[in-house]
Image (tube, rainbow, N blue to C red; front, side, top):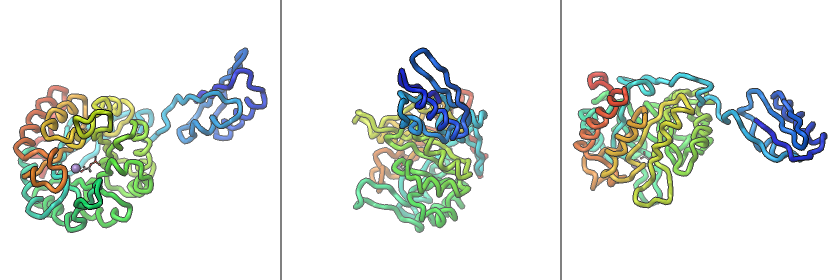
Amino acid sequence: MMIIMHPGAPREQIDAVIAAVEGHKLTAHPIFGVEQTIIGAVGDGHYVLKETFEAFPGVLEVQRISKPYKLASRQFHEQDSVFEFNGFTIGGTEVPIIAGPCSVEGRTQILEVAQAVKEAGANAFRGGVFKPRTSPYAFQGLGEEGLEYMAEAREKTGLPLVVEVMAVSQIEMMEKYVDIFQLGARNMQNFNLLRALGETRTPVLFKRGMSATIEEMLMASEYILNGGNNRVILCERGIRTFETATRNTTDINAVPVLKKLTHLPVVIDPSHSTGDSAYVQSIARAGVAAGADGLIVEVHQDPPHAISDGKQSLTPEAFAKMVKQVKAIAEAVDRSLVPQHATA
Ligand code: PEP
Ligand code: MN
């Protein structure tokens, strides 16, 4: 950190800042200019907030040089993190595809669509049983009953399950069923939930908040990593912008930016980022072209009658077409889809 003092700041103020820097177990390197003093604070200072020094009298500005997150950073872990699941890896050369409906609606729906996405090339199966709906009057999910259907689908297809957890109180029950917890966009800064997920050893598909910066996203993921759960998969699912033509705006930039800043795998959710099945294939292709390590896509056997997110859900046929296109794109950027036979 560089702490820039006001021109003419008296020596007592400079000394007070130096003492505070040392109090944080950092080394202070003051540079005394003719008019202005700059104090370099050197050491492992990721846990020290910029504001700590901004509050001192005589301080003009504080500039951070190292990142405020640590465990998520490339500096901490230079190599890409690669996580292994039943039948695929994520973060390496393979580009796995997670697919399934927005919500678990019933047993037949789940067993049918799980089979359909598997045949089309999905490597993991998604489905929400606790739904974060804008309206409290909208369908809130089937809860544990839905998880029973998901578990049956896993038994029949071999596909690992990705399911959103909305509350700390759901974790214990859900862990019996779920292979990967989804942390939803609306909960990205639910710090209690993040801490509780850090205590588990179940991997987390971590969705970017709709108004979160990339730094905020990485800081929030740090809560999970800091608890000792190191299997965090980051997901760009679109952010809110002034644009209203699509549900959200896919921040494609976030893919290479995240890949530069962090070792964690990065996936794209073209369903929530566009909100329209007409755009999902394009953005799935774009995500993989940009270097995404995977995709999560909503698929429903009868989108017009889906209980939630039907407009953005692909039919199994459209999904199969998307998988073929994405395969070609993956190969063009020296990646590959997961070989079909690999998933049990
Ligand atoms: C979902 O995956 O159905 C969902 C609610 O996602 P998000 O948290 O990205 O809105
Ligand atoms: Mn959805």
